[in-house]
Image 1 (cartoon, rainbow, N blue to C red):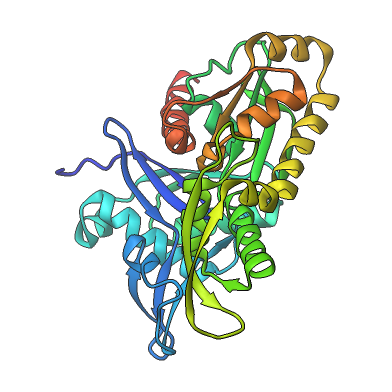
Image 2 (image 1 turned 180 degrees about the vertical axis):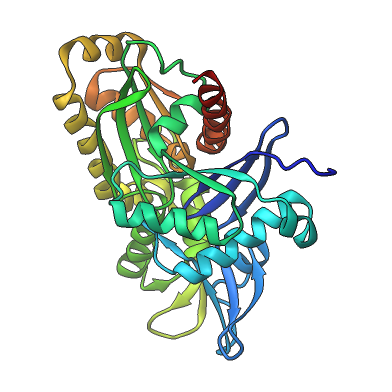
Length: 336
């Protein structure tokens, strides 16, 4: 790599971190999890290796997710995680000491100045030379290939792990937006609660996530599908396997998906008539891992009467947009 240090775009998500390098695309996609030894405070594993330890660690080791609901909940651990990922992308700690990259990080549209500051500080401490911040819906729109510079309205729904960001964008900026703390993690929690209440079965968050991916449903399916779910019976305390239907999971997720549909409705109500006309013409774009929940696009379509498209490579949209925006910033600086 020589003395060249790439510009880096980071999608610092509650569930996963994606890193985009200019000219290479997305080079890293790992869960936002860090395993730490409590006694020595040393980092044992980061990303996928640490995720495997969730719910499976002895007392002295903890697997931490340092971001909650789209914001930093554990500053030190976030900094360590970022440092690890950035140095991996650049090509090791030695290079990292000499060459510090320009980094653009995305944040949910509803963050406070304090929360934004925490992201900038953590990224600087992790080894950036300059840090720029971009709002998630804008990054998602750019990554989804929308031309946001024109004076036409686009509506983007970005559903991540911790937050769902809904925004109307025109002339490169957010016109109306809302950010709610209901997204992929809340779907998992709802499934854990449902299994406990309905079947007396205790399951972990990793199991809940695989239930969501395989049979999670936001809108009635034409054909019911089922899945075998393993957990611990709360009465006997012993392991047990139960066959769960998708309609049951739809009931479990009903409250969460309704909150997202309500938020979309709220943003549309606040949108200027001219922009509303553009949106009903072009449709709504959905990005983020949460948008892959089966039938969520159909539910929003039914609720709003507007066509809903799921972006291509939807999980990578925000990271891609973050990287592209950084390139655009350099261009703007040169023009001045």
